[in-house]
Length: 244
Ligand code: CDP
Picture 1: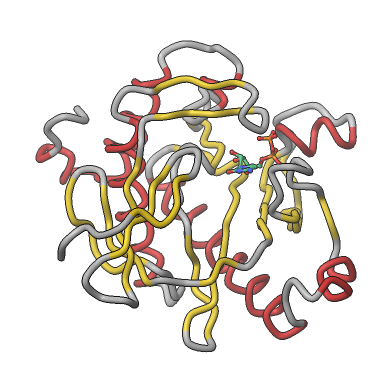
Picture 2 (picture 1 turned 60 degrees about the horizontal axis):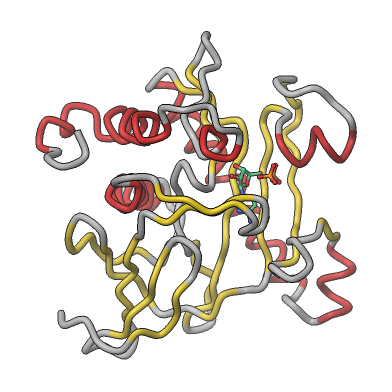
């Protein structure tokens, strides 16, 4: 599959056309941003880690009955994905308080949430991805009631599956962000699932293994991404070259 015209460059990824009009190539960069791109930097080999972690997690989720845009991993930094129309919403599911929810409600980080908290955010860099509810979405026509129900149930399926997956790897899934797209009348899980988009704490020690190490200048950022990759791949990580 040849890499064609560049369609879009985001903060962490570039999308290219391919020979197949229904398939795009998603390329993962080492660029890192935080606080709505006010903080910028590079995390060496982040693109390699996030591509491989996302590929493994999309494959795992497909096995659990979640429909995703993932087609296949092409090389260290790229994967083929179905060409979807992104729904302009970001879903966050929180299992433990952290980040935005702690700030919003003045709650300390690290409190287990029962039941988990589901949030809609409007996908807008200019507005800082504001927290919204179903009525905002329906009144603006960003998605239909049927699509909201589908995205919500798929998101909880993802939460259950990923919580179990990371639990087996001695990692607590604190929270994560998902994006969905429309493809031939169906809704597919899209974008990426990586330490850029999830908070992951080592079970017991609560050592942060995600982008908070970059956001909060905690150091050992590269090592954290590589550790997540190692645990996600398990025994297959023996085959990991550059990212070891
Ligand atoms: O990151 P921040 O504290 O500002 O926001 P959050 O709402 O607490 O983030 C919840 C989860 O979604 C975290 O795992 C973030 O890494 C992720 N997130 C993301 O991937 N993209 C965004 N635009 C915002 C949050």
